[in-house]
Length: 393
Ligand code: PHB
Image (cartoon, rainbow, N blue to C red):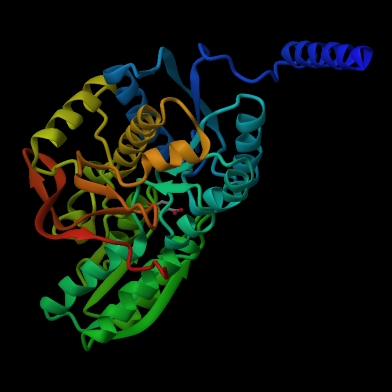
C-alpha cells in the first residue's frame, strides 16, 4: 500500500515537472490573464484588423486592467481573413497560450469556423466584427459586440417606405451577412407595399461591380439598396459614379458598411446624400464618442475610427468587466460575467442580452454630408434599443 501511494506521488511529481518544462502547466495565479485576439491584419479585410487592433490597444492604454493582481494581456494573431487559419490560431491560443477568451473575427466564415473550438474548450468567444445573425447560435460561448445585418437592414427599409421609395433593386455580398441583409430588407419592403424587382449578389473575394451595376441601370429602380463588407465601399462608389448611376436618378441607400468611416472621407462627391442605417458614426453626438474619437485619432496619426473599432473597443471592455465579475476565472464564470452588461458605448447605450448573447443597441438613419470640409455620416433619426430580428429563439 505504502509503496504504491509513494510511486503514485512520484509519478504525479514527474508529470507536473514534465508538463512544466513543456510549457503546459496550469497557469499560476500571478501569470497574466491572456486574451487571444484574432484579426485580419493582412489581406482584403485588413482595414477591419487595423481598426480593431487600434481600438483594443487604446482601451488597454487607457485602463491598464489588472484583476486580483494579474495583468490582462492581449495576444494579436493575423488570420488574413482565412477561416482555416482562424480556426488553427484559435486552437493554438486555447491549448498553448491558455487564453481565457478568444476575440476578433473579421468575417462571418472565421467566426463560424471557430465556434466549435469555443464550445469544446468552454472558452468565451467575443465577436467584434462579424455580423451574420446566426453566429451567436453556433456556440453558447459566443458573445457579440458588433451588430447584425437584420438589425440594421429593417430600419433602412422602413425609411424607404416613409420616403415613398417603392421600386428597388438589392445588391449584396454573396455570403452570410449579405444574405441576411437581402432577406430582411426585401421582406420589410414588400411588407410595406414596395417591390423588389431584382436581387443581385457579388462575390466576397475580389468583386467587380461593373456587370451588376449595368443590370441596375437597365432595371431602373427608384433606389438601389446595398450591403458590402467593410473595405469594399470605396471601390463600389467609384464604379457607381463611373457608370453614371448617380446621374441616372437611381437613389443609393445602404447599410453603413458601405459609407464606412474608414474610407468615407476619400469617396468624393458621389457619396453626398447617400442615406444609410447603422449603429455607429464617428460623427455621433455624445460626450463619450467625442472623447473616444479624439483619443483614437491622437493615438493613430489622425485615423478616423469606424464601426469596427467600436466593436473592438466595446468587446475588450466586455471581456475585462466580465473578468472582474468572475475574479479572473474563465469558462462559464467569465461567460456569466459578460452576459447582461449594460453600458454607454461611443455608439450610444448598449446591452449584451443575457438570453441571446447578442448586442441590443440603437440604430440610426444617417445621411452623408460635408461637415467642416470632411464627409460624415450625419445621424438624423434613431430607433432605440433594437434587438436582432434574426433570432429564432
Ligand atoms: C461579416 O463577414 O460578417 C461582415 C464583415 C464586414 C462587415 C459586415 C459583416 O462590414
